Length: 421
Ligand code: GLU
Image (spheres, rainbow, N blue to C red):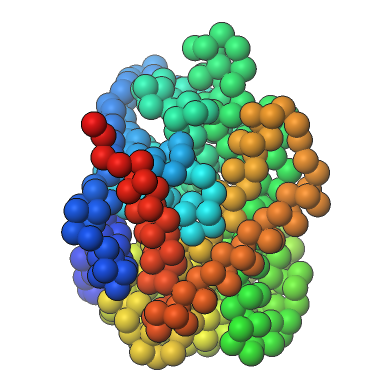
């Protein structure tokens, strides 16, 4: 029976979290006040409300957003999220995080994000197609290969990107593959893009283990989330020899202290729609507190907070999700000596290979998977070293160090372009 006696903690505002993280870095950096003001605002935020015809013939109204936080370093870049809890506050935070993420790995993009308030799991394939085509049309005033390039995020996938490519291309009268990334390979997608975020998480975890003297090949790992990030990271970490002891999806998790057979978990999930029941049951809260070496929160934001951070037992936290840890939790983990790899570094593999996909589309010249993975590897390792060097120099945690690096780059671009007019 569900326990309703414990009130859910008040949901933290993702935008407040993003601003607090920015303010901490801006202060440490001694960023001039006027530059702080410029960077604290999203440049553009579009709110759309649109009708979609459902399979039963009725029409339902949906609300969606597209926010561009900053475009000083290049076109706006960032995914589109379909989830019942999407808000403008959340999309603004996710857009700002994209600005810093692209700057940390030094790819020539600004930051954006989109979202539609809907439950894609409860919609049919054709309803999702109609919703996507209409939303793409509504935000077509912003998106384009030179202006703003969407990609998948929570609740969207390569098929969603195919519909957006087709809709945008139909309006133009010719095919424009570079309008989105994370597309199917058949229409200009890139080798390695589907696995890229999970691969980047694995690389970040491996570098962190190396740095902290942890035997990576024997490390125990708990992963919250079984989407595109969590499931791929699990497989790639296991390939490196790590022991994945727990993994969860939106319904809960499954745990075995001796390690899970991931192929069997995948078959169980395909047959039952959830990983719950495969082995010992754990909740999505409990999975964060399991004894393990490496914890990968790879679901949604606001998971590790001041209320549960002191119960985290992992030595290393690798943020596969965007915004899973609040600033209050950051301080607790830092005091406990936990090494936390921030989202803007740890999950940047996705947007790095998105960048490769966009470059390939623009040149109509495609690379093989080996080239993609080795370029991703070198960008991730370089970014990891840049961030850890900054953390040492500034005697700070890796999130603040990553922000200092990113904010410096964006501020430099803004300053050198000067304020228009
Ligand atoms: N949604 C992913 C992220 O949060 C990918 C964004 C992209 O590739 O543009 O990083």
